[in-house]
Image 1 (cartoon, rainbow, N blue to C red):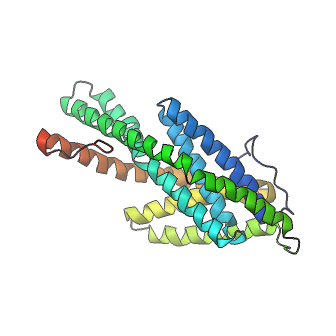
Image 2 (cartoon, rainbow, N blue to C red):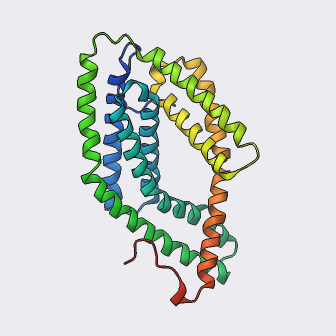
Image 3 (tube, rainbow, N blue to C red):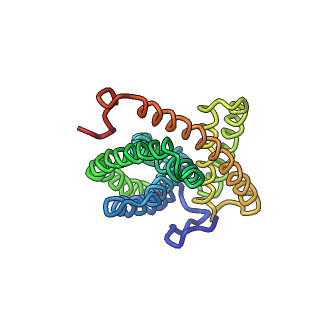
Length: 272
């Protein structure tokens, strides 16, 4: 839970809009660096780290949203969601290959059905990566420049808001309480195991975890450390559950493709 060495130094009396500008600037720098890395090499960990950076940025937008002008807040939410969605399919295939197909093939290295499924999964993964890289290259031209422009504007507004008495410490505590209340409601909805509800609970838990990590310098440590540990533990459990749901879907897709004649199989994502 320790802050990264490159994280901005937050103070209890900082105005929320100024804190957002500082946190978002650090997030965009991280996202930019990872986008460069993704273009240079094919390493699943780079994509994993990009998705974490995007979740951090989205958590900060959620946490600081009430302090931001509506137009900027809505643009950040929309554009970061678009970026995250562009990475979803490739990441799903990476996890499926590493955590489902890989271990299965280690146990049954001579199984021809598993070998065929692995080949299909790798083809789908490579196609999904190509489609992702094409989309991300476009996003580098737009909307990312608009997000960078917003930061300068928001920092300027924060500097001019002399009559705004809202301070980061109290604001952050209110947002953590709000996040915890939302998470409890989602946990109740997910008790019956509905995949959509479980996924929503997992996303809300991640968001609250990243909010706590981003705002740790101005939050009461005794309270947030205990809550953070609970969130990490729950996230691991829900992660295994959601990964299992996704693995079953991708396995069914691979088996369906294996059963199709070549002329009837759908084109690979991103194929012309």
